[in-house]
Length: 307
Image (spheres, rainbow, N blue to C red):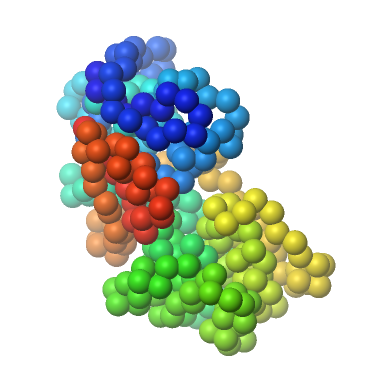
């Protein structure tokens, strides 16, 4: 079958031919309609999570059809197979039905990215009128996080990221009330200038130095929910920075499938009512290497590949 294949460490996925997947016990064959690339796929190809079984097909999540014709969302493809192929195999627990009125791109965005935003925001227990900051706001996860924060009761929602044009789109679309451009000088001063009395909740998609600055711009009682490390895997803080604040590293992908599926179904309800929208960039399978490069350059959108 045709697939996008990673053949060695630190190389992009390229179109090639791969063996047909053969489902084992508890697994199902999926005929892929669309698969996605995300930051984690690039980190895995670069060896961040340890050795990989080269060659392999990247992309854990996507939308496809079962042999019965039923359209489904799927995640956690069984290695060495993945979503960037004509077919893949997936554990039964990771295959979730889709309503007809949710398109492929939005369904994929609501999977890993959407649940990655929803679960920490729910666990932050946003109170009506509170101020919420989203770090890494221009990516798919950040875009969803901004919209969910408002749906969960936030009074003011601020997006922070490095790209000025992408930030401008957030305010133009009404996704954020305010934005802060990071990486242009003093991030702490820039965040504090917008924060007023301080942010009550931070959804931190990038960690590293921007998270340090954000924590220091929070109000007493703030909850900082960290879920990504694109800006660096560590922060340096004093105890004073954390007094009367909670800083939590939130894991979502490692949670039981039933918990993630329930969160996904809550997100589908928002998506069906058109209360969540996400920028999507689509490529064909023959454009896999181009799509891989686009993801590496931070596309400010969910990147999907259609076989």
